[in-house]
Length: 495
View 1 (cartoon, rainbow, N blue to C red):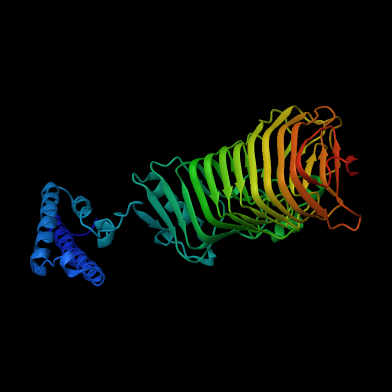
View 2: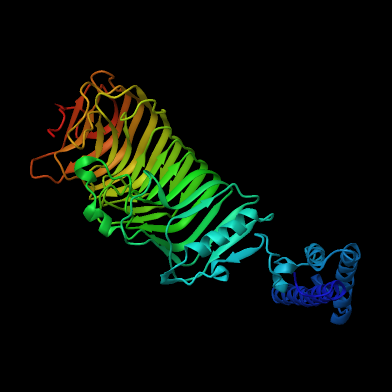
């Protein structure tokens, strides 16, 4: 691995550790002398008699002890490989003051760092020039990482990498870290794909880490927005999602930006215990059906520190989502942070344990929202909390809409999705519409245990002061309420 015969490698390691030991010994003793001298400036000399032993003898004592440790480690490693010798020397140097890194790292041995070996996509032919198709190089690197028997890091150096569909699928034998310093760019051409498919896909992985370091996933979706007709037909799911995370467990995605996706930016599906930190979304308000982050059939997802600008929901929460935390997110433009839509399909799984807190929502079509379809099969939303939310010129800052029908062609009859144990707390700011709080619950399945607490929303609308409208709900009200709760009966919007 290091290109040295075993005796030479061992001898070299021992010499390096001895050198480090001597340097640390001198430094240690010098620091002690400096401290002693400083202290004697303020204290009587006879209280602290000087030690006149020569500095050379002090160093000799320190090095003698360090040499014993190195000799012991070298003896134990004499039959080992050069890499094993480096590991043994590292163990010996751990007892030496000032040794701050493993010896393999100090020697620059490839793969000796705690994260294991690394594979550079350029070593497999990636150009990163924004013009050459680098898909093959990325998949070749992925195959090597999947087969690796030690934790492996995939390195993406600076550059713009044009890639088509990437299927980064596991399971892997060991943990994989995807370390990015360059950007990924999708083809601009609009191609038909299988519904709900992704452009960049990570799936069936344990302990996966994606460190973006500010990397951009550019979906080049502007052409697709012009040709799709999903606003009128609801049929645009044959366009690719920028990033799709499927069946990831105990994983972390941080420091990336999804830009100009052709459809949803991120879809989190059937995942458990994953964290998204500083994951940002950027697309113009006119981009169609470009939900920022969609979560479905997943448990224990955490989203923190995101800034989301898009043409649809900043965050949408689908069926089967449990124990979700959304914290410190800035949303706008977009359609707000939404649970749903729910009830469009049969056998949808319950949504439970949702917390959205400490967020800023600005210049959006909605604030915090729960939406279900009319004429729906049975479903459930339970234990959802929206708290400590700032609204800045938001249309309908607080909304429950159980007659959600965006395309005007919906089933008849009331929604049968049950909404219970909902809390809207410490929500303040400005509403762009007269109706600041709208709770339009289902007549066939009225909302239960809805709590409104400390809400202060002022209308910017020319229509007059803010009001609160309700139907088929009797909220529990505590604290200050502006506007006063449920002063009007609300009715479905005309489609």
